[in-house]
Length: 437
Ligand code: PMP
Image (tube, rainbow, N blue to C red; front, side):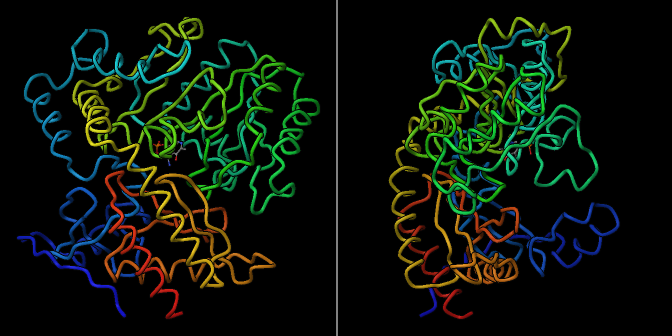
């Protein structure tokens, strides 16, 4: 049985994907529009759906890489953006406006402990660059520790912390050390978080003067293949880092804002309170905005004379951010991520019973991953098969992402308004695609 999906015609008269594809080769970098063999030209978005140039509807289970949190073009977010654009589009934070203060206040209310001071940036990369700089300035130390399979951005220090990609580009930064990935599925110590944490202590002992500026990690690795860190790892690392004089930086760019369902912030599931929290992606539902939240004590090291961003804290983006927080509350999106995400994970686990190619199903809420292998025992990554499934699912009306060091993980990060029916449809399509292989 081929799962059914409806086609909704959209009146679109613009250039077709084939024309765009030719022109992009001249003017855009090669990555643009290359996700599928035949480029997909999206012209419209509505909540969990996107539409292509032929009016064909797709269930968007990737959500612009975990970014469209409330749903595409959510009316409340659109309204907030339009209203603020009409009222006052830009000032810089050297002046005050309501939007920036309102969002900072609402964001601070979502943070535990003393985390109350908000710096706004334009992306996750900038948020993490700033966090690393803060940690170095505050502690007076230089060395930073990140996990091998983490993703933290693509500027200088953040490329340094993102070992899985950027070491190939010869942009290795001094003073950045990469520790073993506490990956329960592929890691050498399995589920033993404490053993992986020992590696952090070893790196400090053998690779630094004994003191570090900080440690940065995602609560669930996103780009790295939706990897949940082995239990007990983060609390153990937290105390190791504290003893070494460093700050704990939680990268909540993908796992924040209720995406994991059980908690508003990913780190909360690990029972720690970081010194610095970075966020981006979902916080503007697609408006380019990131943020760094820290304590007043740590924030003192960064006067605006040291750190300034022309667009950071832009009123239109902060208005979007406030609208996102309100929608999460009003539409009970975190609860929905929990309920529907758990349901979807159960259904994916049932698929695992049926299809040998599924090696592992993991994640929380609406941050889920399905790792594909050629052989369950040997765990040989099934990269080409992953590409095939991705493409077939697209042809049947479902968009999912890919990731993982070996490129063999299907990433499922839909808008948090995803329903049980959407989950059923996704699973049926995946099931059908895998049955045909
Ligand atoms: N941190 C994490 C966890 C991310 O997933 C990303 C983006 N994939 C970043 C940082 C960098 O964010 P941006 O692309 O907005 O610079």
